[in-house]
Image (cartoon, rainbow, N blue to C red; front, side, top):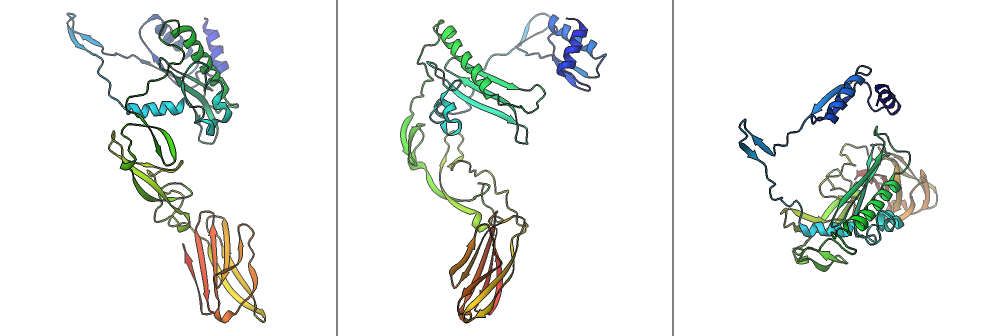
Length: 375
């Protein structure tokens, strides 16, 4: 390939740009030597840095006489996850019914389900921090092979269209053909082969669901606890979390026999590893700046009030007289209400809540005083 052709190819696709840093895996063979020579020629046109990386795996070391000094041997691998837990994950990833909540009918179609071939499959994407996908990938494995497919732009820019159908089709066709046309003919795989279920696993019912569980799972070991969460962030409530934003959830706690750490059964989306980061103790709350009543005629009074919002928009307002709600709204707020009552023996309460559940309450008791509570 002529150098000019390489230069034009680089300009067309912006493969190497000004001030780039290029790392070359350098073995010392003809291919890597030729690549370095081409890059050096290209560097005469474009300013960029070249770094050569050579890896000595140190599988065997010798002295000048050829005597063996060191030889690396594969050590017995250490388990990173309980085999029974790993099997449960594989069971979930291979279950089209389990993934229908996320993928709908797609979870039953190509890529996810390959006729006559059992596979466990996981998809994913990289988000650019502004809500756009940079790429799409799919990983799939069977008892004999694991494969992955990725699609995205070489420069890391967000994709214009979904790449999900592409990676699904690549995985589907490859996993189908490699099993039926390669491993089946070699006698390494046959239709119906699945990952073997580890000994000791059992079927149990827990929290209304019947499913497979590890041998160490014992409902009697679970202790029921109440944990208070923030209902917006779904994280642990703090002293800065408003009372209305707190929710107490019943969870079960047990000791993980592998890590010896406490584990909790939490609703989807909730975490006990982080604290509420939505609310702040210094955040401005809604304020009721005025609450009074003026006689119109007889026992008919006009109750007037003024509210100043805090950092968040108002969510709801409720006005009570002697414990009875006479006005409430979730969107449109009036500044006054007409109502008949005996003012000499009336308790008027105004409650305002914003979208973060900060609450302000103003009490006007028997025409004596008015004071506010900020909750």
